[in-house]
Length: 515
Image (tube, rainbow, N blue to C red; front, side):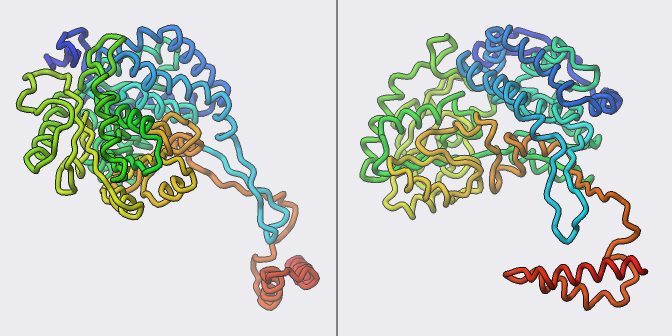
């Protein structure tokens, strides 16, 4: 809730107003960019080891304040504290720890080989920071999905302007305070707190790189603005992730995974299990096991509860619309409560498992981002691969089978940024793997080595000792064509004719010296 530039922060789970924050004005954006660009020359010329000192401070403070951080994230998002700890805080701490081993190895000067035809020269790649990176992050995992791109950009020598989601502004303030406590230099990390208009203004100001996580619609708008100015971008967008359960799968494990994958964070995960395809021969048993699991789940905000509240009221409307659409077309609600019986203003949405679902329903086509699990039977492996790929999204998927070779074969045919075999979602927790989507799920990758390199210019450098007066390919060309022809024919044959090669090369050197 806004009041004269002040944002009153309300817990989605309890409705309690628990904090007040100043919003960043549109007029302040120029000043924020000015601070960032002023800080860049010093920060970018530090060694990686010098930058990592600040990262060590940040990790130490996060460990000391871990329980308090979990409480604050839970309060602002409505998720239970365990999910705040495991899915928001732990991945950031793990990433900070991994940078001690990976940052220098990935970003220091890399020697590369030089072709024989360029003998006498040396080649290497340098990684040069881009400048000011704009990170626009979402509300579902407001800590993790902001901190990891921020830290990835910073370690390479960039300065960062972060625009956290206005839906979870308190987490944005929490992050800002952490960087201050870790004593990062002024202007190296700046936070801008506000809504869509602020995000649009920050984008229009021309950062040197944009990293956006959010909806497909907003991602396309940012991509269009960036394209006009040739600003490189990474767009991490939506998903409609399929889970494929083959006939020989460990059904009890698969059912537990489906429930967790569909309902963790109330289903507000871009990598949620949003479509479950089960071999018809085990479909009824799988459905029974899923219903047993759901019946044992608890919703609430205590440490003994499993599923917290939704975070964003508008998302409940999307969930309601998809459920009503499915039920009106004949779907069966196996667990949960019909939307007409939901309590007005209640943010704890029931966990809903649907059967009798088919392609024409929104719940199988549109991203849900809520606690719905549609389960669909299939008859053949070829059919389920086609069903899994029949989506405009391609972020993540899972395949379940005791036959690992078969599961890998299926995984290889799914158009997706990631696939997990006999588990769900977890690729995002492995910082050594690239993360990103295919099709409408986004553009670009982060995590892994690529996640650090995307924030840098890759500069190719070649070095010659400079003692020769000329090169064989330089002017004049007189008398060289036949020698080059002989040189290339002898070199590019299946078996190199070294005698002819060296003879032609020596003649070219001699001819170049004479000229």
